[in-house]
Length: 333
Image (tube, rainbow, N blue to C red):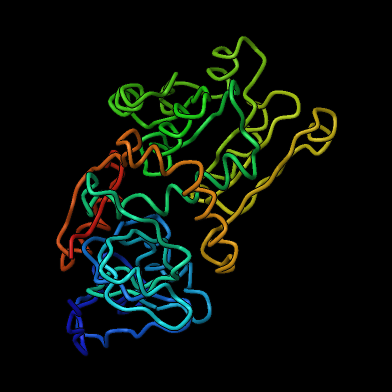
């Protein structure tokens, strides 16, 4: 049965760069899908750190993307543009989107959508794409992590951190995390981290070296950057790989390039949002092929922290910025 699609919808816009209070609900036109796109009636949207950075005016939407925040959604496909599979209409999907997720309706590239199993609530499905795409690409494609290796992950109880722990367990990695309290360390250990280091009370370099009997870790997944980078390099084993996915600790650092050369270290990093639709479509295919069976069997689920109504997006952002969350925060539409 074809749904009647309204002309307008409630959505959250960024009034001006600033704190959480600049997020305002209002009426906006419902977007229309173009070639290769689908229109999704949003049931839930995930909150992510890039949304916060965009709200602050430091991470503008790429050309052609919606200026509304929101990079991951789940809901029902209610329309399809040309070149998109019309059979998707009426199906529940989750998707990585280029923006516009904090809304009643959102455009997604058809190739960036993944089917939501019947046993997965849409509120949980909305919490999967951004962290799953980010961790899979950076940990397994850029860092070449493989069975038996040890990985140091900063921010162990964040959405990225919890996803890294869970994917690491599924693919035979030993995951060491850093957290900001003993309580968060306990939460990370309960989720499956092999070791958790309270970075406020312990030197994570010394701890990582002790855990690995002085060998170091094969991979560091870093979202801090800044003065963490030289410390991260001291955690790496020879031929180790360092992947930066965020710069919460600062854009600039100084490192000893002789150390990089003599120990054959690899430094890389990425941001996902500016990548081409073709790249993200291929990434979605790889995730569907390698990971989605775990989702369908219920073996991979996002760690859910708290849900907020769409109108309370400002409160959701304030909660994320408080640093008290464990896992994912979502907006229910």
